[in-house]
Length: 514
Image (cartoon, rainbow, N blue to C red; front, top):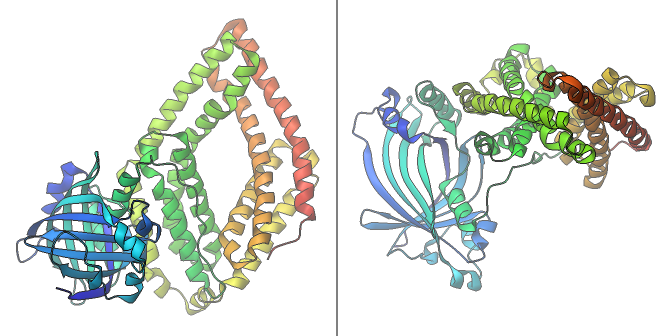
């Protein structure tokens, strides 16, 4: 029983609300000549108590399929935009315990070379899934196995429901999975699922609460083409956006919304950085939809900053002032309203379509084939020259807008902040092409400038929000509270201007890293 095979598995995972599963299963695009095969799949995932396999990116499971037990080892690969590509070795085994001698793929077998690791393997979590699957013929060359999965993942006394569809590519191109998914999503509320069942099971086993996810740099190297770098940057930013969706919709922590806003800024700036190389019709749809989402989330984040970051120290300093308390209560109400609108946007069909469409757009590259030869040549050139020219241009814009930084007006300081933000993100995008120590130092200087200017902008926002918050705070207490807030705003701006001069001087004196 040691028949084993190793192959690259490519599948697109989509989450389905439980009440929409029946509608999805009956969808015309999932109808085939034969009835769907229905199976119960009970899987046991093994690891050491210290989760050594998980730390290596390896998953080991033994699955009962009817009367047979199949062992599967998965490792390496990637997951982006819901598209999972992993090396997979599968073999039939005698029972529910692993048979490590049946792993004949050399790279996967190396993960089990340690005798200590092999001796410590134990069940960590289980999945109990009912799967309904059928093979679809998309065209003469493309075949996809569509599997609707419902069930549960369990680890100890913790559990999590599963309701999803997996589109596994049997033959054809990955972008065809997205094309099918977009057609299904026109009728059923599907959303991309970037976590495999194994990843979800490990999260349960570890028992650690989910936390907001910060941006991870795209992996670039100096041999990359411009188009490859563009896609790597966009995929990394899209993953950042998706990683914070559930937490933001669940209203668990304002940081989820903040991280989604950061991911949006990075996506929009990546488009702006690379846009000169594309015809306008290529980037226009993505730019339009990302702007809609940014406008939907922006007000909620502004109110979050005011209520959770700006007002607490003011209230602490000036004590239980009646006018300030009423202002704070009014702002909290406006904040809740803005957050509700933002969550509705992320929960909407338009948002789901945007994320799925953007992933399909990056995977397909149909727009690349339709471009003029000269434009394709620029995109297929080495990324190093493009990166250096981009950074030089952004650096020049910052230097120009920061002249006489000590005497800039509020509007001019805002423009400088935006220029620094764009330069910082561009530097972060291309950091992998340059010396790590130099880029870290440069990013630290830019972060300091951005933080100071951001704090100055927040202080100005307090003054702007006074009109909204005092609409229902009449009389003397309202006048006193308004005076306190405006005075605090001006004092904060004065202090920050001194810090800005010091940070700007340090920035000006530093060597370029590109």
